[in-house]
Picture 1 (cartoon, one colour):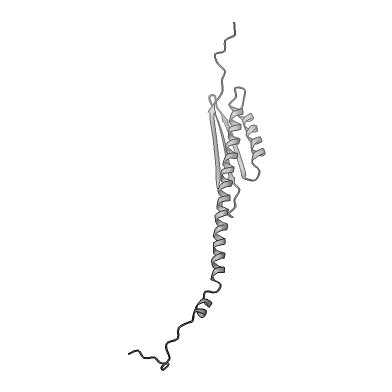
Picture 2: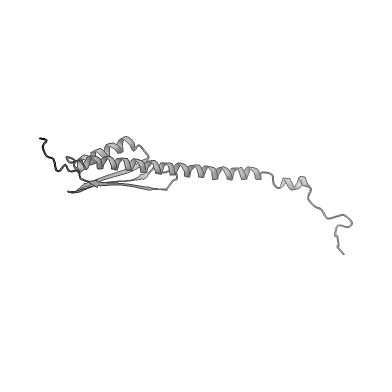
Length: 146
C-alpha cells in the first residue's frame, strides 16, 4: 500500500500555471540564439562573396598584365604596369596586399597575382592567387604583297 506522509491529501503536482512559469523567458533565449546563428550565416555568405570578387579582380589584373607583356613589342615591365593599373582601378579594399609578378621568357609569359581577401571574421586571412600564362606573340611569315 502506498503511504502518504501528509495524511489523506493526494500528492502535490504542479499546476499548469506553475509549469509554464518555469518556461518563462525561454522564447527570448531561443530567439537570441537563432539570431546569432542567422548573423553568422549571413557573414559567411558575405565572406564567400568577397572571396569570389577578390578572385575575379586578381584574375583580371593577371590577364591584363599577360596581354600587354605577351605582345610582340611588350616587356615584363609593360605587363607589370598594366596589371598594377588594373589592380588600382578594380582592387579597392577587397583584394588586400596584392603582389604582381610578370615573367617574360623568349617563348612564354606568366603573370601571377597574390593577395588576401578583406575579412569579415576577425583573424581569418584567406589567400587569393591568380595566374595567367601564354606564348609570346610573334609575327612570322610575312611576305610582301605583289
